[in-house]
Image 1 (cartoon, helix red, strand yellow):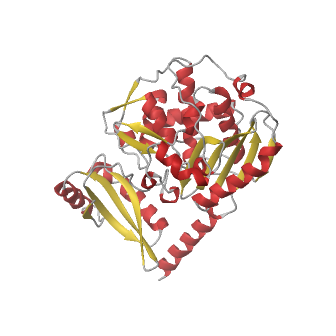
Image 2: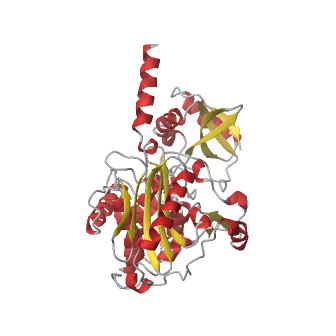
Length: 410
């Protein structure tokens, strides 16, 4: 009984200390002048979640401008990259991906395997690339940011602030005016499949043309957005939202309130600060319109998306384990537990992640919630098994490690 009580107290303390349950921190900057238009706890430390990929993309764009990369260059996918948890493109160890595919994967789908493959290509190792990320952060004035990995997984020592992420957003727009429109794409084609994005504010608020969403259990729901309206460009960052919708609503209210306060300018002002030469063969992507709610269905149809393909970001974990994309073609999963809280599910998933690579290389973990009669349970599963026998063989090995396991047909 004492052990159970202690465990419950630990879980409660963890939840109460979680930034996602506090008021979100936020900031709005005038992108042309750098003036802070409004802020709340903008310098409070916070986990970046997948906003970390903004820096991975920045360094990729920089390498393209410097001629170190070409858009059609191929990158070899390591076993480490392929084993990253979803969201991802389900790349296989030893396969290749182009720089163009990796960039689209990071920006639009927040693909962890693509981010890791790019990091290893540019920095040899994830840790080596993370040092480059932190160094670049200092050069951009991000004095309160330290990166530990290129894709946003919660890791000791990795931290940022709303203010620093706003500086990074402005730098992406300023330093890479030719590439920045890639952030406005609602989807991209990847090997015959349409991969949808989930930056839903672009469907709700006219003039929003990027940048990036992010979520982990530890950080809550994060968002960096850019709005161009009446020749005024502002950048907003919200960190630690309770839900994807509440975070988006907060951002929309901030953009509406502070846009009229920004200095009137034009894109040339931003472009004048661009550094380096223009990268070769930059994709020609026109800035896409961001429709209001009434135009949402029409916009989806025009961009060859179905309502079902739009991802509800509240069902996504971009860093600490999450939901399997619909594009996964494997027929069988294995389930190692069904528990009553996401915290317990994340703990079980992390434990299994230390064992799975030796049992079934390439298997990817995720969490599936299921609600019935008002009760929600969280199933911890691993995917990537083409046959029932392969799934059963993996279960047999896991049981030797004292983990319950059953094979589950998709």
